[in-house]
Image (cartoon, rainbow, N blue to C red; front, side, top):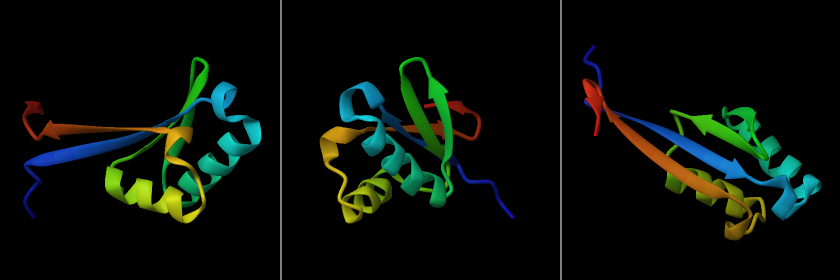
Length: 84
């Protein structure tokens, strides 16, 4: 089996102070059930996955009625031999 030339990491940033605790909890619940690892970082929460692409997470959250301005998606690509 060959290693992929490019790997990705999709991170979803949620700021409870901006969207409210209930909305943040609902977003993170959807993401956790989809295999994202959730961790606090300062005043925000970050859900990360190397299995789900950015466009997929956006469609998933829209399906659950989450507004686009309630979160930020950060997609990072890494070559197998170093950062791009």
